[in-house]
Length: 80
Image (cartoon, rainbow, N blue to C red; front, top):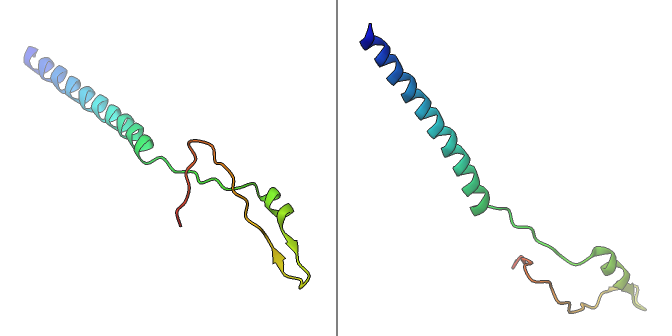
């Protein structure tokens, strides 16, 4: 009977160790995935400011003259 309870203790400890390892693996994997594959946010100019700069010329065509602006540090630009 002593051998059987020892075997049960070993099985219970093994199952607990496996479950803890799986849970820690999932948590660490999610953390790495969030850090590595973080979605990039692309920012553009304020659309209300752009609409104020668009006007019609004498032919009835819409004209917009681009204005150079300085982007803050840390912004990501879409090259396409």
